[in-house]
Amino acid sequence: MRICSLIPGATEVIAALGLTDRLVGISHECDFPASVRHVPVMIEPLVGKDGGSGVEIDRQVKELVAAGQRLYRLNEDAFCRARPDLILTQDLCHVCSVTPDQLTHAIESLQHRPNVLTLSPTTLDDMIQDIERISEATGVLAKGQALARKLRRRVDHVRAETGRTSSRPRVVCLEWLDPLYVAGHWVPEMVELAGGRDVLGSPDAPSYETTWHAVEAAQPDVILVMPCGYSVERTINEIRHTGHTGDAWRRACGEGPDFYVVDAASFFSRPGPRLVDGVELLAAILHRIPDHPLDPAKAIKLEATTLTAGRSS
Image (tube, rainbow, N blue to C red; front, side):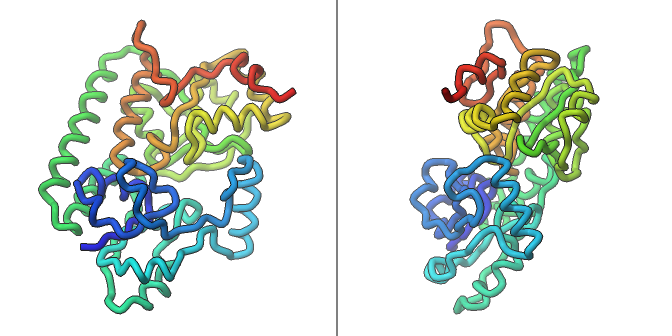
């Protein structure tokens, strides 16, 4: 079976099922595990190709959407050469990747009609069920069921551990920096499982734009900074170089709630197996154990001095 996976979470599932050698096409964001990086990339983003600030990316996205234009380009020649038997795509977020309607023309040009599995998870359990759907579509259902059971056991373990704690910190999760967005879908559920209370996000609901005033009014104990698709390093650099917005971040970090920057690209943005790692990471942040430092590649506590040190002269 020749598999074309156009969403990174599904690509991670394919790798976890031991099917990397069957991949014939991936998206530009499919970078984990390293074993998939040799697979031909089928998707070219039309926004943020050269990085760019969060505010600039947000402006470009809104302009293209308002004009009815697409945010991604499918390399149809490479797609046809790949001759996929199975295509994994999504219909949850039109800002995140190509959607089934964008594939219609390319699929019709193929000599044989491939199967298309469309994924639209909005909860943690949806993601785990999608693992079973992918494993069934690829003929390795037993492996998928075993992986799903393992992930559910890990989630249950975190739930049991955090259920013993008497305190549940008030948490705000920020999915974008400028403008500010509150994270939605599975993230509030992850916070709840990790022993916190998301005071702005709603489980199984999309993210939405907010303001610093609304964040402050929610009176969070912890603010988790997780820009969609960003690593810890990229997030820190973004905050350091955002002008007046950066000044607001520095003031905010000097008082009130604790700020943590987390690796959103690995553990929060992509609905794949590593969301469970994200639940475990949140539990470690919200219920810190002395002498157990966080891995700085996964999460760091954000201090005003950290941001000041990175200011350009």
